[in-house]
Length: 115
Length: 111
Image 1 (cartoon, each protein chain N blue to C red):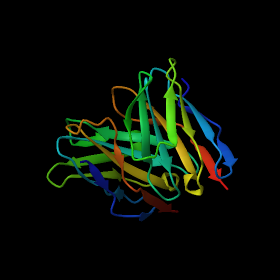
Image 2 (cartoon, rainbow over the protein chains, first blue to last red):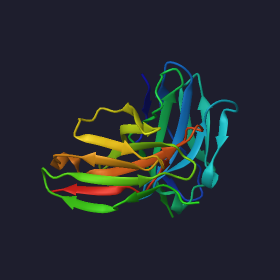
Image 3 (spheres, helix red, strand yellow):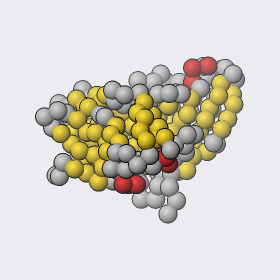
Image 4 (cartoon, rainbow over the protein chains, first blue to last red):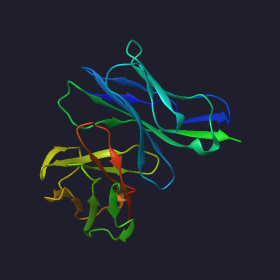
């Protein structure tokens, strides 16, 4: 079975400071990992993904994520937060060995960037 | 290049009624998935369509049904609406690369 956890319901950070949104996962085989962002009353937007290769993945809007196999984590990061980054962030995982085409989403983390 | 489009954007129904939601996938995408997102929750997978067949289904009752057309567009039908069906219904299209491209959603309110 595949599962994903986002341990923080909310993350607060000051504008200009680095931000981290945490995600851990559980799969049987190799993970396909994704981050999505959702602005109020909008659909989800794809930010980045890890399939294989370099553990540091760069995505849209200056976001990046680091895959750590030993810690089964895929934390989302940005060196300098913007107020406009305030949104809901979802981590998702799909198990390569699971026989499913469907990713499982976390509950989401609300990121609030203060001016 | 048009992204994923959904209609209607908002609708209000009463208990027991039926609703049909529509989705056009991103150009070049052949797979359509439907999700239900309740307030404050992550998206919950309803089902996925590929080559006009339901390829996988989540833990939703048979009141939820769907269809995919030859042009890859899709419909989600919900019968005998319950108050608990009130949610944002998201359509997502994808291709072999795996990431999902979501529409803006259809906000369903059941009174």
